[in-house]
Length: 475
Image (cartoon, rainbow, N blue to C red; front, side, top):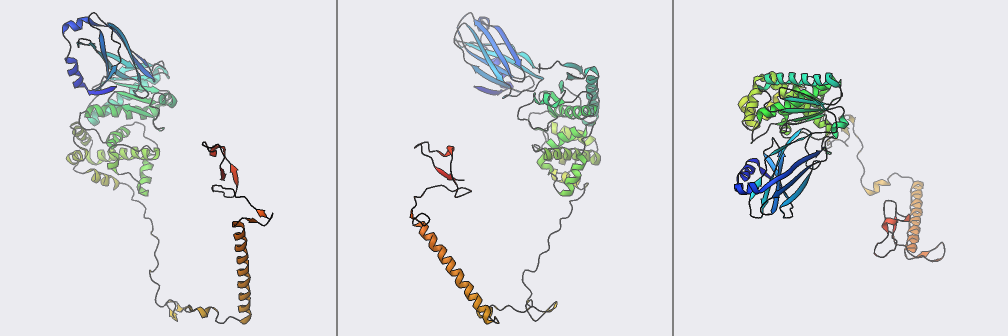
């Protein structure tokens, strides 16, 4: 059974520790945490007591930066020396590489005394690759292909981005950030959750201080696209961290795309085309999440970047810092925009859309008159000569018909009547069971109709499991 508690609650639990005598009687012989990226982390403990038997052991673990710890109650066979183990499935409980974990043990003996082990730290690293690393200004970059020149490009791009964000947001990194750069998309996807969408080229976990990206060594343009984008997320989230509210996604992603040194090809065209077609996504809809559909996701990124650029151009870069300060104070998005820009989300959306092409007018098909003109069948009309009025009397049908025509029509009707009557008689005889072809009664076969009635075949899947007999199906 796994439970989650607030970190402060866990601290209060640790504060309720047994007397000094219990601390002296229970000792930890061995405590380990062994990662096997990306599959699992195995926590193991061997403990012994010089007094009463050990009867309960809890494992407490979580990301070091998280305010939440998980508590696992482990099964224990009461004894004075025990060994327990817990395997954390990290494909179910996903953790990205570079996550720093903290764990400890809470041990109880038969007298109710408790022992709390000191916290230990685990670095959940992707040990499948031989990583190189460099660290400057709270940023550590990891890479395994491309040598020192590639690592230098990664680091220099990171430092330039920090300078830009200092001017734009007014802050620097207060906590370390780790950037893992995989040499290809397949390697990176093997480090992501198995259900991650296909179009992801990089990800950031601001709460953990981790960035993942897929960049082929030597692809300078991609370095200057992914690194600034993901590092922007880290700096912005650290600058706005609070326990109450988050950022609107359009602002977070828009600023990240805006800060890229390499712009995404086609983003401008996407926005222009969507504006002309009237398919832009409402800004309010981009506040909480982006669509999973790749086309809609790309448009969401492009729109968000455009809106942030509009704010900077129309209101000034200092307004970005003011918005960041409001989000730091957990001010709701609508209120923050009103306080800083003097507009609502919808008004900002409308202002931005006014700078784009307007949707092309779609012609509405013309509608004809609802009622026919009264003189449509008259002797005169708008066209000059009117159409003759129709004769709707029954006798009018045969008016003017020659005698030979009337006779031919009568003969045709009689022949048709006899043909139809004869066919109906044959059908009736077949229904009552008389087979005229062989002169005997025909045994009926029951079948169930399908898309092709009349063709009877036997299907193995249709065999009755209760009686063992086959059922015929028409296919």
